[in-house]
Image (cartoon, rainbow, N blue to C red; front, top):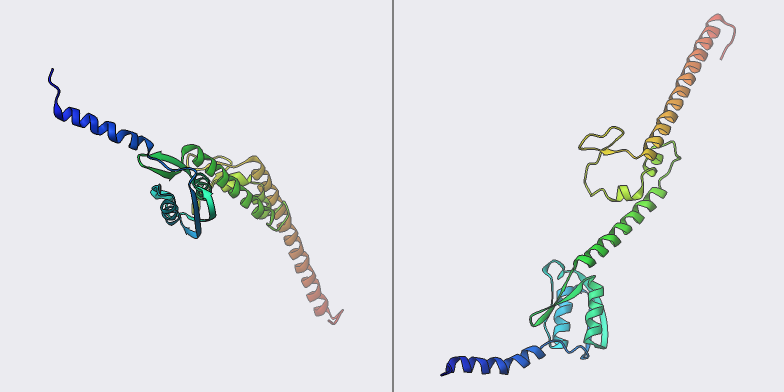
Length: 217
């Protein structure tokens, strides 16, 4: 059977190119030196790519993240690992290059770390509030820090003891603190009213005494 010359040529070409293509990839043990200080990730990758002789890129969403990295005579593998840590990202091999991206597992880890940091910040802010338990500060402190940390900036959130579909249930501890504050405010109000009544009575007696000539002030 006569063979197609074009097919033979194509097969030979593939056989020649394939080993080279399969061999393509980063030289993990190649020594590289990189110095970037508070620079965009894409600039650090450009410098590392030039030193490694291999294209390294980043996902568009993170290429402007600011990173700092100083390495001298490190292996390419070490440099890539350090850069991934600095960018809080992970490497993914692609055809002819490696790309820094945010994987689902890493994204979950980052989200967890950010949540923990937000909760810690709210907890510190609550601890710094003045006032005792029977006060507005006491009501706010009754919230779990995680509840307040979950509220997005500029969001309007309403807590209620009988919430509707657009409201959130008021935590029991917060409702208790609110009741204490209201009770304290009522006691204070009652005390002020009694003081005003005593003051008014004293003024009436003073006026009568002066008018009767019994006393001179």
